[in-house]
Amino acid sequence: RAKREGRNTWRLYSSDMEFHNNRRMTLETALRESLAQGEGIEAYYQPLFERDSGRLYSAEALMRWHHPQLGQVSPGEFIPLAESAGLILQLGQRLLDQVLQQLHDWLAAGLEPVPIAINLSPRQFWQHDLIDDIRTRLEAFAIPAELISFELTESTLLDRHQQAITALEALRDLGHRVAIDDFGTGYSSLSYLQDLPITTLKIDRTFIQALTEGNRRGSEAILAAVTGLAEGLDLQVVAEGVETHEQLDALARFPVQLIQGFLFGRPANAATFTTNWLIRRA
Ligand code: C2E
Ligand code: MG
Ligand code: MG
Ligand code: MG
Image (cartoon, rainbow, N blue to C red):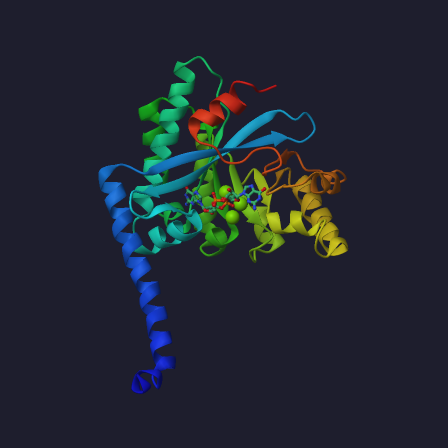
């Protein structure tokens, strides 16, 4: 016993690492399993509303993964893992097809669907046949490009500026809207932004939170700058992660067109989204 305790520090460290690596390997194997079986991966839909009219405008598709033994795993954990394990392209294609099938079903049922936003991680955005792949899939489901938009983070677009512009132009020419997600958390310069053929800025939730909880004056200044910039560049602005009426009130004096957050709607499965939002919409 005494001998063992002498090695406590080492053992703690070692078992920590083992735990981490085991979890990683377990998840990776499980994710491969789910992909192979075509089960457990599901698109949830979170509504975005026009701030001034309160009307449903669009929805964001958010991936959910449930594994029979592991249960629900959060995208914050499995998306980066899929990205580094080389599984993200397959996962992303699975999700896009699911969303396209859903849009097809809504149209077939005579419902007027709203545009759905798809998140693209770096490897997805930089895959060499991105544009062809997207176009082919949309054609297969006969879905017009206006019904699918994309979300990218600043860091995805940061390197290879000219190539990023070319890819974004191709998406735009197909008819897709493109948003910069979590805006304000990356390091893109303002002049950089000016050159990007995008349509939308999604202001990160941390800035919305800080409007009522953190450094209020500082975050008001940031909100004013970002929304002013967006106005000047003719970009649509989304406030992400609006959770309270106080936050909504604090946003009132800024030119923000769209609101997304738990205050108005949490991500929901297709059936719930359809009955709660799509059918009942104003
Ligand atoms: P994101 O694209 O910024 O998505 C918004 C996240 O904020 C979602 O978390 C959503 O559930 C959460 N959220 C929305 N409103 C609120 C709110 O009012 N309060 C709080 N606290 N959170 C709110 P989720 O679904 O866990 O996704 C996390 C991230 O995982 C996403 O961030 C996105 O980067 C990534 N992700 C999700 N689905 C996909 C996907 O299909 N493909 C890729 N590449 N990434 C995905
Ligand atoms: Mg997003
Ligand atoms: Mg976001
Ligand atoms: Mg995020």
